[in-house]
Image (cartoon, one colour):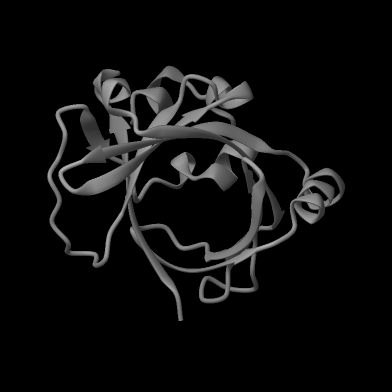
Length: 167
Protein backbone atom coordinates (compact mmCIF):
# COMPACT_ATOMS: atom_id res chain seq x y z
CA UNK A 1 0.00 0.00 0.00
CA UNK A 2 1.39 3.41 -0.97
CA UNK A 3 1.63 6.13 1.65
CA UNK A 4 2.33 9.79 1.09
CA UNK A 5 3.91 11.68 3.95
CA UNK A 6 3.76 15.36 3.13
CA UNK A 7 4.08 18.51 5.18
CA UNK A 8 2.65 21.78 3.92
CA UNK A 9 3.78 25.30 4.88
CA UNK A 10 3.01 28.92 4.18
CA UNK A 11 5.97 31.11 3.21
CA UNK A 12 7.43 34.14 4.95
CA UNK A 13 9.11 35.72 1.92
CA UNK A 14 9.99 35.33 -1.76
CA UNK A 15 13.62 34.41 -0.94
CA UNK A 16 12.96 30.85 -2.18
CA UNK A 17 12.71 32.18 -5.76
CA UNK A 18 16.50 32.61 -5.96
CA UNK A 19 16.99 28.88 -5.38
CA UNK A 20 14.43 27.44 -7.83
CA UNK A 21 15.93 24.50 -9.72
CA UNK A 22 13.08 24.16 -12.21
CA UNK A 23 9.42 25.06 -12.60
CA UNK A 24 6.47 23.35 -14.24
CA UNK A 25 2.95 24.48 -14.99
CA UNK A 26 0.25 22.09 -13.76
CA UNK A 27 -3.49 21.77 -13.93
CA UNK A 28 -5.64 19.29 -12.12
CA UNK A 29 -9.27 18.43 -11.58
CA UNK A 30 -11.16 15.97 -9.44
CA UNK A 31 -13.32 13.11 -10.70
CA UNK A 32 -14.68 12.33 -7.23
CA UNK A 33 -14.01 13.58 -3.75
CA UNK A 34 -16.20 11.80 -1.24
CA UNK A 35 -16.66 8.36 0.22
CA UNK A 36 -19.19 6.49 2.30
CA UNK A 37 -17.33 7.03 5.57
CA UNK A 38 -14.22 8.65 6.95
CA UNK A 39 -12.45 5.30 6.55
CA UNK A 40 -13.24 5.04 2.82
CA UNK A 41 -13.32 8.73 1.79
CA UNK A 42 -10.93 9.60 -1.02
CA UNK A 43 -10.28 11.99 -3.87
CA UNK A 44 -9.63 10.88 -7.43
CA UNK A 45 -7.57 13.46 -9.31
CA UNK A 46 -6.40 13.94 -12.88
CA UNK A 47 -3.19 15.99 -13.17
CA UNK A 48 -1.35 17.30 -16.21
CA UNK A 49 2.22 18.55 -15.78
CA UNK A 50 3.95 19.51 -19.00
CA UNK A 51 3.43 16.67 -21.47
CA UNK A 52 2.77 14.04 -18.77
CA UNK A 53 -0.46 13.07 -17.02
CA UNK A 54 -1.46 10.99 -14.00
CA UNK A 55 -4.51 9.59 -12.28
CA UNK A 56 -4.15 9.89 -8.50
CA UNK A 57 -6.26 8.36 -5.74
CA UNK A 58 -5.64 9.79 -2.27
CA UNK A 59 -7.34 9.22 1.07
CA UNK A 60 -9.26 12.31 2.16
CA UNK A 61 -8.20 12.45 5.81
CA UNK A 62 -6.37 15.58 6.92
CA UNK A 63 -2.82 15.41 8.19
CA UNK A 64 0.68 14.65 6.98
CA UNK A 65 0.21 10.93 6.28
CA UNK A 66 -2.33 9.68 3.73
CA UNK A 67 -2.75 6.70 1.44
CA UNK A 68 -1.93 7.55 -2.18
CA UNK A 69 -1.82 5.70 -5.50
CA UNK A 70 -0.65 7.34 -8.73
CA UNK A 71 -0.71 6.01 -12.29
CA UNK A 72 0.60 7.53 -15.51
CA UNK A 73 -2.11 7.92 -18.16
CA UNK A 74 -2.08 9.20 -21.75
CA UNK A 75 -2.10 12.99 -21.97
CA UNK A 76 -5.04 12.98 -24.40
CA UNK A 77 -7.09 10.93 -21.90
CA UNK A 78 -6.27 13.34 -19.08
CA UNK A 79 -7.28 16.34 -21.17
CA UNK A 80 -10.58 14.64 -22.04
CA UNK A 81 -11.25 13.77 -18.39
CA UNK A 82 -10.54 17.32 -17.24
CA UNK A 83 -12.91 18.69 -19.87
CA UNK A 84 -15.70 16.13 -19.55
CA UNK A 85 -15.74 14.96 -15.93
CA UNK A 86 -14.33 17.77 -13.77
CA UNK A 87 -16.38 20.73 -12.54
CA UNK A 88 -13.29 22.89 -12.34
CA UNK A 89 -9.53 22.90 -12.60
CA UNK A 90 -6.85 24.15 -10.22
CA UNK A 91 -3.94 25.75 -12.05
CA UNK A 92 -0.53 26.35 -10.54
CA UNK A 93 3.16 26.60 -11.23
CA UNK A 94 5.20 24.14 -9.21
CA UNK A 95 8.70 25.31 -8.40
CA UNK A 96 11.25 22.73 -7.25
CA UNK A 97 13.52 24.28 -4.64
CA UNK A 98 16.47 22.26 -3.30
CA UNK A 99 17.40 22.94 0.31
CA UNK A 100 19.24 20.94 2.96
CA UNK A 101 19.45 17.80 0.79
CA UNK A 102 15.70 17.79 0.09
CA UNK A 103 13.42 19.24 -2.58
CA UNK A 104 10.66 21.62 -1.49
CA UNK A 105 7.78 21.84 -3.97
CA UNK A 106 6.52 25.42 -3.93
CA UNK A 107 3.08 25.74 -5.52
CA UNK A 108 2.22 29.19 -6.84
CA UNK A 109 -1.50 29.09 -7.60
CA UNK A 110 -3.14 30.74 -10.61
CA UNK A 111 -6.61 32.01 -11.53
CA UNK A 112 -9.05 32.37 -8.61
CA UNK A 113 -6.32 31.08 -6.29
CA UNK A 114 -3.67 33.59 -7.38
CA UNK A 115 -1.75 35.00 -4.44
CA UNK A 116 -1.64 31.71 -2.56
CA UNK A 117 1.81 30.14 -2.40
CA UNK A 118 2.38 26.96 -0.40
CA UNK A 119 5.52 24.85 0.07
CA UNK A 120 5.22 21.08 0.36
CA UNK A 121 7.84 18.60 1.48
CA UNK A 122 7.50 14.85 1.02
CA UNK A 123 9.20 12.80 3.72
CA UNK A 124 10.12 9.16 4.21
CA UNK A 125 8.57 9.06 7.70
CA UNK A 126 6.19 11.24 9.71
CA UNK A 127 8.94 11.83 12.26
CA UNK A 128 11.69 12.57 9.70
CA UNK A 129 13.82 15.60 10.48
CA UNK A 130 14.60 18.27 7.89
CA UNK A 131 16.41 21.56 7.71
CA UNK A 132 14.04 24.54 7.64
CA UNK A 133 14.89 27.35 5.23
CA UNK A 134 14.37 30.90 6.57
CA UNK A 135 11.54 31.46 4.05
CA UNK A 136 9.48 28.55 5.40
CA UNK A 137 6.64 29.79 7.58
CA UNK A 138 3.79 28.30 9.57
CA UNK A 139 2.83 24.67 8.99
CA UNK A 140 -0.69 24.13 7.58
CA UNK A 141 -0.55 20.36 6.95
CA UNK A 142 -3.63 19.80 9.11
CA UNK A 143 -5.69 22.61 7.53
CA UNK A 144 -7.90 21.23 4.73
CA UNK A 145 -8.55 24.72 3.33
CA UNK A 146 -5.05 24.57 1.81
CA UNK A 147 -5.76 21.31 -0.04
CA UNK A 148 -6.16 21.64 -3.80
CA UNK A 149 -9.56 19.95 -3.66
CA UNK A 150 -10.85 22.59 -1.23
CA UNK A 151 -9.50 25.39 -3.42
CA UNK A 152 -11.84 24.36 -6.25
CA UNK A 153 -14.98 25.17 -4.26
CA UNK A 154 -13.43 27.80 -1.97
CA UNK A 155 -10.86 29.72 -4.03
CA UNK A 156 -8.27 31.83 -2.25
CA UNK A 157 -9.68 35.02 -3.83
CA UNK A 158 -12.90 34.48 -1.80
CA UNK A 159 -11.18 33.95 1.56
CA UNK A 160 -11.72 36.49 4.34
CA UNK A 161 -8.76 38.43 5.73
CA UNK A 162 -8.83 36.15 8.81
CA UNK A 163 -8.62 33.04 6.61
CA UNK A 164 -5.72 34.53 4.65
CA UNK A 165 -3.92 35.29 7.90
CA UNK A 166 -4.33 31.68 8.93
CA UNK A 167 -6.96 32.00 11.63
